[in-house]
Image (tube, rainbow, N blue to C red):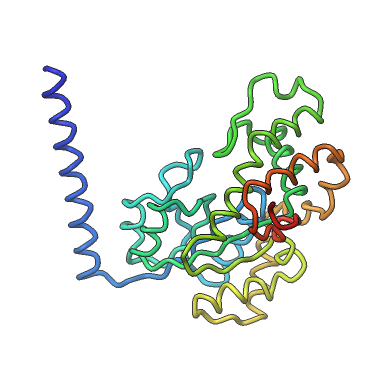
Amino acid sequence: MSRSTSQRLERGLKTTSRRILRMNLRLKKLFGRRGKTIFISALPKSGSTFLVNALARVTGYQTFFLGYHQLNEQDLYLPNLIDAWSMNVISHQHTRPSAPNLDLLARFAIRPVILTRNIYDATVSLTDHLERESADTPLLNVPADFMDRDRAARLDMVIDLALPWYIRFVADWSSADHDCLWLRYEDLTAEGVDTVGRILTYHNLPADKAAIDQALSQARGEGSRLNKGVLGRGEEQLSAAQMTRINSLTRHYPGVDFDCLGLSEGG
């Protein structure tokens, strides 16, 4: 088979696939009951797994990943959005507001919750994760000699290679023309019932405080690491030079408010 023939066949298959997806969506819209979607777009290590577990308990919704693969850039994936059309689902992903993602959010009438965390604490927590749990994440895959380096060098790698993504995440969502609810990890740890209640109210769902409190307690009882996320670890473990390097990343976005990361305005 010639290369040109192969390319024509590939284009034909892609066109057919897109037509099937569009037809599937049209049929679901015509005959399927529209479900509700609670979508949490979160910074890594910001308590999103715990939050989704609590929300699933209080709502009865199914947890459902709306991306293509957990270790891929966690963009929205149209086939999964179509599959979830008639279901009540909760999804948490590390998703930036690229033009295609915003288009899909608008097409499926999804109003995301944006979950952030103090960036110094998140740096330490992400480094802990790479050391103890997995060397592969959607943001950063560390080399085989990662654990042979001292702790300061491991933190440096996270700062240099992963933290720019954190800054872009906040800056991009801040300028995105889309209805969002902003929440912080610190609010979840200090005022969990009120924070979950805000999400439910935002989605026009009942926000019974007793039910929320019970759901939070059950989620903590499943071995959640939320209580281990001690506030202030970042400032204790990062050097002044490392924190200065983190702060300097905001200069690329003058005028953006980075208070949700525990940083001052960019510029």
